[in-house]
Image (cartoon, rainbow over all chains, first blue to last red; front, side):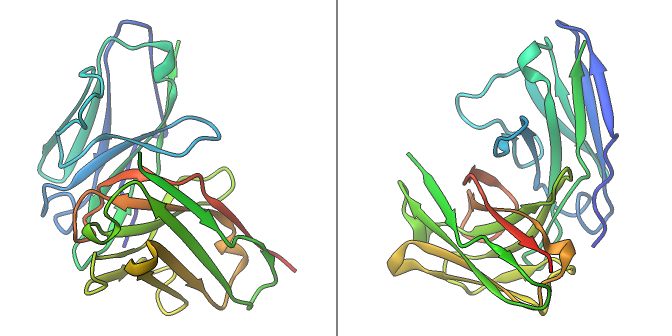
Length: 110
Length: 121
C-alpha cells in the first residue's frame, strides 16, 4: 500500500481554473471507478467534493469536476474563488476492502 | 442530518491500548459501511480501516494491521476501533467516516469532528 501521488501545491488567480492530479497504479485507480476527492479547510473535517471518479454530491457547486485516464485521476476547479483555498485529497478504493489517500495538495488562491 | 461523534481519545504510553467509539445518528446505520481515517499533526489524511454494513468485509491499512481492530454494533448505532501496541507514530486525530455504500468502497460522504490520540511517554 503506497500513497497516491499528488502535487504538494498548486495556485491560481480568482476566476481561473486549476487542475490537481492524482497518480496511482493499476491495482487501485486503474482497477476501479472509485476515486473520490475531499476538500479540507484548516481545523475542519474533510468534505466530499467528487465520488466515483466524476460524480458530484447533490447540491454541490458544478465548478468542481473530476476525470480519470488510466492510473491518473484529476480534479478541476473552475472559476476559482477565495473560499476554494484549502487542502485537497484524492482517495481510491484499492481492493480487499482497503483504501488509499493521496498526500494532499495545498491550493492557494492568489 | 447525519451526525458522527467520536470519543475515547487520550494521552497514552507506547505499547498501551485504547478503544475509540463513534456514535452515529440521522441515518440508517446498518445500511452503510463505516471507516476510520486519521490525520497526524500537520500531516495528510491516512485511511486506517473500514467495515461493511454487516461486518462481513473488513480492511486495514498495512501500518495498523495486526494492532488495530475495527468493529460495529448496529443495535447501538456505534462504530469502534480497538488500538493496541500503540506507537508514537499513531499520534493523530482519528475521524469516523460514513461510506455511501454498504461495502467499504472509499466514498466518505459524512465525517465526524475527530478524537485526538497522543502516544507519548
